[in-house]
Image (tube, rainbow, N blue to C red; front, side, top):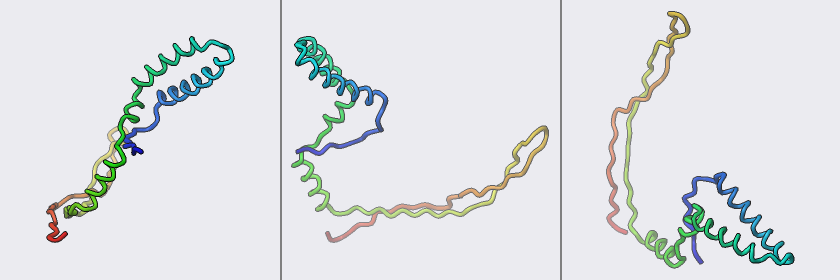
Length: 130
């Protein structure tokens, strides 16, 4: 058994076309059996296999992790010492104004709040016993 690592960016139009072609070729192959034109469908199927191997969905299928390796990774993560990093950030809000043009030589004053960062720090927190 294998677990698939998914870094998908969503379904594209090409993915829908690929799925429709896969269903169409499956139905056409089954229809070719009683018609006796399996040789033609065999050639089409070979082209389909070549296209399938060059499709970007094949990279998804090839990105698999064996189940025993996955359990090793989980076991190592459970028994590793935790790493804690503390991060603080101090800020305050300032009211600002700006002139916004509204027509010929006319401006209106617009007020808004802006965040101003005054200090930030980070430090690792070490756990002595694990």
